[in-house]
Image (cartoon, rainbow, N blue to C red; front, side):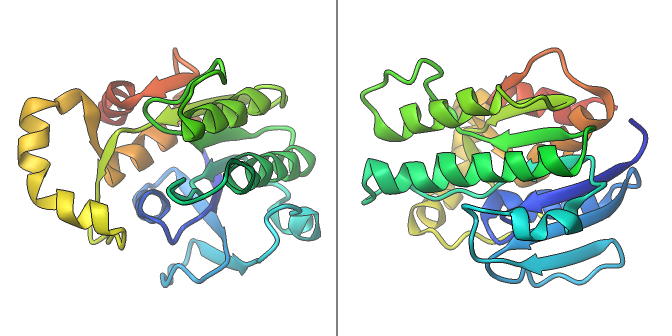
Length: 222
């Protein structure tokens, strides 16, 4: 693939904003459609934005995503304080609704899903978020996309002006140099995730599931 027209779902979060920046900067990305509840606050000649509330059903905007050949799904929430039912609704149901909309809109889609380090593909983990993320991964594999990639980042460092509102992240930011030194395979950046998605769309990948170190390696390839 030499030209990318990407739908990005969830551009107001840490990873989604980083992916958006990389897409707008990359020459191979010709257009970007940002879908979210709130505006991403960015204006750019490549960018069109749709504000939309009901992520359980994207069929009303299906015509607007027709012809796009990539979906970078970055919508996600912390599981802290959530029931498994509610976390599953957002993590699984919303994801599958987006996948279904992309499948109906185009026969030539690369779908990149932001999962997480520690996700349990067997869906048997005692950790709620890990098995729910595993279910989302499992259900995505049933879609006949041209390519599907499941990205499992670890600790994500915001760069290029990306900001993170989550208190835990703010407290950890000063420790990033130490984390990189002691645990380099578990740390990535918003820039590397965005670059990896673009590289995977353009050139494919040897692995469908990319752990944190795989993401970093993919981001460095040309």
